Amino acid sequence: MDPSPPAPAALPIGAIILPGRVSDPRPGIEQAVIAERIGLGAVWLAERPGTKHFATIAGAISQTTSRVTIGCGATNFQTRHPMQLASLGMTLQALSGGRFVLAAGRGLPYFCRRMGAPDSTAEYMRDHAMILRRLWAGQEVSYRGPAGIYPALRLVDIPQVPPPPLLLAAIGPRSLVLAGQCFDGVLLHTMLTAEAVRRSADIVRNAAADTGRDPTSIRIYASVIVAPDLPRDEEDAIVRGRAITYFQIPHYGELLVQANQWDRRILEQIRAHPQLSSLGGEIADQMFLRSELVEPGRLLPTEWLTQGAAVGGASYCASRLTEYLHAGADELVINGSPPQLLATTTAAFQQRVVEHSGG
Image 1 (cartoon, rainbow, N blue to C red):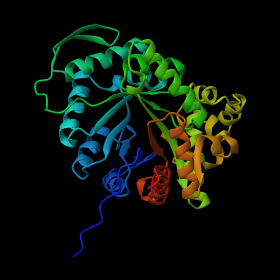
Image 2: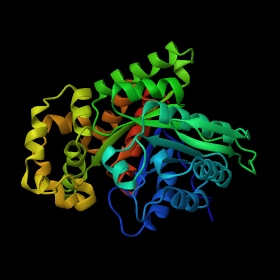
Image 3: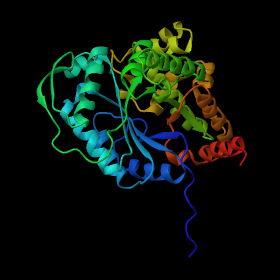
Image 4: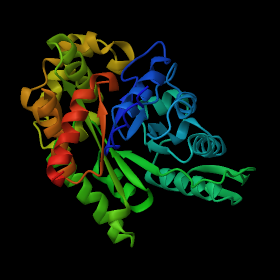
């Protein structure tokens, strides 16, 4: 029997597995296997309470894959004690052979209040990152400050692998500066234009340089909604049904239109849609499936979707992804479409890489 063809070289592109709401997390394991098979360089897990506990799923796919980076994008420091999160990070590094990446976000004040969690100020995020790094280095930590009160923290067993890179999920300029000052990289929010990614990358790298860090050492991850060669109803669910939730959320929507230099008045029209205005402050994607949000999603201007996502044929989507890399992103995170829908786009991107290199 002829040997199986070698897997294609890993690309600077990953994909979110289990995008959106799911009742069964098991398909995510096969999605990760497919991602590795088609040459994607990473799989990412967007944590959601219920069936998308990132550590549980990441542990499973660490044993069914051998090459892809496994990224959590993102969790919140407020939801776990530092000892627990530090232990999760190092356990996943040991299980995966050093393939884990941890991103943390500041979270929505709305959810923090409901959980009884503290506000995630810049000092809170900075000090949590410091505590994790010291624990991963095997140090004992005694701390009293914005991140809490911890008399004596120490991990008992430290595996012989480097600690995971620690990223900050960010949109606004203050969070971007914090990422450049204190984190190993930044995970940019979905629905940014390529030009907004360029401006965001500049803020991060300038902040790193101002702090005396090497700006080229800070990794920039850009998230892009991709919908390649899909029927209209499926495309609308992935693009309009997904994107509308970002603009419905107070503060997030304002940060996105500010970053993209779009018309802020459109947010008022979006939030006035009867399906959204009736939620009483609840987040739309906590209440509806993506397919159920297509109708309010039609309020999104076409230019927002063409500038902030990659929609169309596989070759066109590959060219759009290239634009984000040229804009300053080091790696891309595909949102919306699971890996089984991305084989042709991945192949088209790989062909562009070959042509550019003269191969």
